[in-house]
Image (cartoon, rainbow over all chains, first blue to last red; front, top):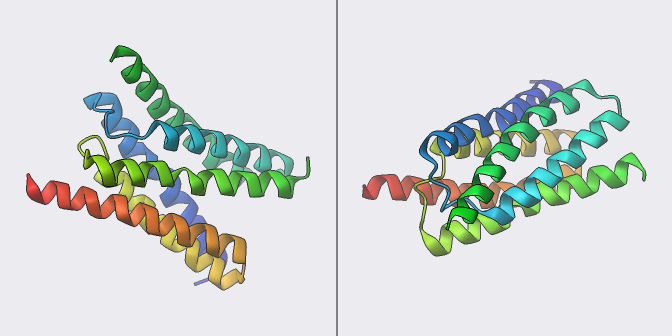
Length: 86
Length: 86
């Protein structure tokens, strides 16, 4: 196995992982166990990864982080809406 | 800002993000809103990132993913325990 292949597999899994969480949070609106701190830090971190990818003109980094940014932002906004309703 | 500095900042944020989630899941045992699919795919993905870092002998990748693997595994094991209790 080449390192590149393992790297692409890793990137696909850690990006795809946010699909079931975003779907679950969207459909169930069960956000009480979701950490606001996690999604705040994570969304900011992924935005930095996106800037890093743009500076390096690396399409794999740009695409993976653009998708993750959209999904993590959705969970974060659902969590903020959930806190405001309390 | 150099790309490297932005990359290190991004890595620190996306790693540190799992600390508040692991603490919240550990102390509240409120796992119903946590997606099993997300943490299964994510933990596997982070394990691949770790192997990628070892193959590349990159200490930043190894350390960041070792910490994230521990935290994501904790949330995943709490989620599995929560499902078994139901």
